[in-house]
Image (cartoon, rainbow, N blue to C red; front, side):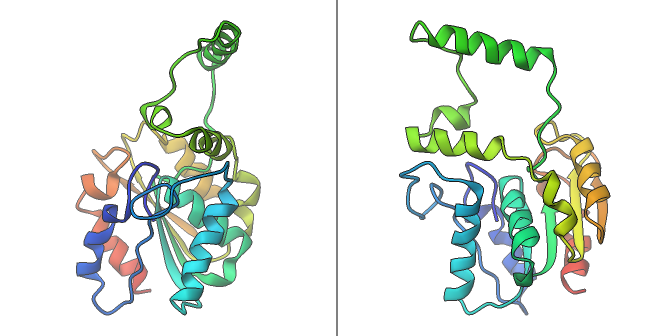
Length: 212
């Protein structure tokens, strides 16, 4: 399951290495070939969409692989509908609220002030491209902290993280590792937010984990 702004092609290359497995690649709502986001959505809507695909594909139990936003969705399913999740692979996953310093709160205050005059600060490029419904969805997602639910994840979990990831810093990986009981953290050196592409060490460990 891909990150925000990507599509199923982000992981499609893995199919070449998983020839003995049934692989299903997801386009989330508003991404790839899936329908656009036409109303404000929450994380549960994306999780329910994935579970709907499982029903249609007659999959009762699977290894879930999620990068960034895809990791959010995977963790949500594992913590609330764990019966579907045999193993969990999280790669530079979102889901932990970031540590926010004075600079962040200054920007928030300035944005609210400027909004009074019909202006405001620009958000990220991902945010700027969205429709109004997409922007509301994005806000709902990024402000949702999944830390309180991590203890509910009981399946074996592999956490892969780039040591140079600036979008989801390493401290988030350590929080996941600490709070998911049956988890192992694999640090990928000289790798950023797309660590599974940056470091060739990802693939052999990933395949061993999927094979059990």
